[in-house]
Image (cartoon, rainbow, N blue to C red):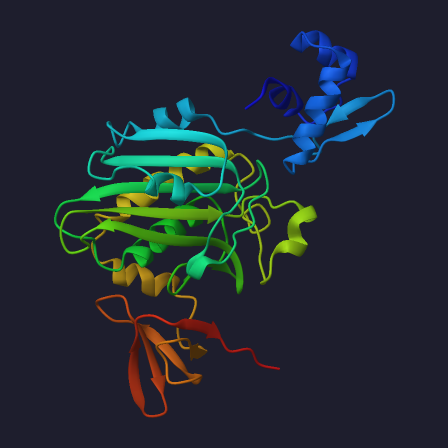
Length: 315
């Protein structure tokens, strides 16, 4: 993070001459940096005679803080915090996975091309939410139901941090009261049945600025709104989310955990997508042992392993 952004992170006004003196540059240099910062999508206010400020301030992620917290459980883990990247998943997928660290967690303050399932855009404003990816190498194949395992583990962690009503929407979303607050994207390198590397991308809406609300094309909420404890910092949440992801690989009885957080249980759903026979409406009744969604359509039960699942809306 640039020195100017570090100074503005406290959220209070700083006069231009004071900033110039602290940073050892000219007033014109401060103005140029402010314009550059704004060009990246970071909101900086300017008020005559008061100076510049970032409304609400920012808590920047610290790689040393996160690494220290994670290495208590995962001694050899690699941790990186990026100021900006196109996508944390794409960043990790760019490694030679055969020689990459066995466990690697990457965070970004901003994503220019954040991705969700099926290539959807993930709105990623600077410094307010959590954009991260965790990679792990497996030698005996992927754990089954990987995105659901991760979802259950994250839901359990968030519930412990005060989030009320957190649920997992099959196959890869975190919901509160039918509003999305997080998403999971799993990508795999190598042989999923043998030696491979899984890259798990997670986006969590922590405190989404109102200024970007219009860019989100579905009902959403953020964790601060639904009960995240005020004392939980972004850095703490970053390390706890990564711990939950890596621990999910070893979860036993994860299907029972999913049943506890299942957002679609006994609800009408619409099944549609390239693998379905047109749009079908049925009732979701949990998952099978492999993580497929069980849906009763008419008098038959089907296992949905791909395609799209949408909660049917009623008047």
